[in-house]
Image (tube, rainbow, N blue to C red):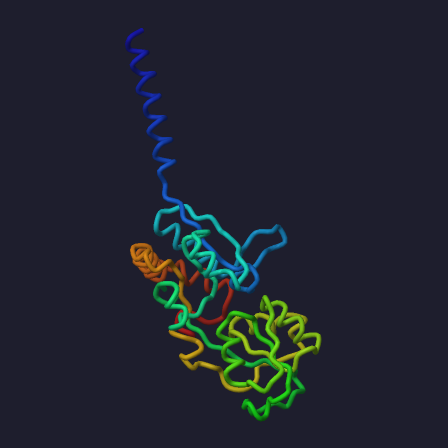
Length: 259
């Protein structure tokens, strides 16, 4: 009787310890937009998926933490981080000096370039304020693309949209003459049925004043330890092939190096 009671007590203690261990697993919240395919977007079942999301979850796994995905409109994505609605942002955010005033960034997890997209019959070859004066030019609001358009083409009819999908829709419908956006999502758009209207025109936009140092993960400035952990995890998934496997699901080139 005493032996059985002892065994039962030991087993109960193990269950309690196991439960306590499970409860003790660190949890982090991953913030993203959900409207920027193929990087982050909702599937037909209402799940947020895409390159950003898969990279973020791979980093969480490498750090040994459980991660919850939180979707947030782009215009409120940095305020949401600062308000502690999530712990880090992985949403194709360019690392710029302006943003560094509000948040800290990890090392870049992919390189960035912007491009112009116009109808195939546009005949556009020059991209100056004079040549584009009065033309309807679209970009997503709150982005470095919007900053570029406003700085370079002040005399154009600049139209800013809450999401990149809405820019693409007006481009396909002929309601704007030109758009400026991140190259990789626009390559994805041009491969769709709606995107057959249009093509990339002009040279890639790589000015660091607008594309920054690449694309990074944003973290609250005081969370320096989390920045270090994310950087270590990023290096680890580059070395073990995880990054490459995710990259190859979405892109024909290595977006980490743009080769």
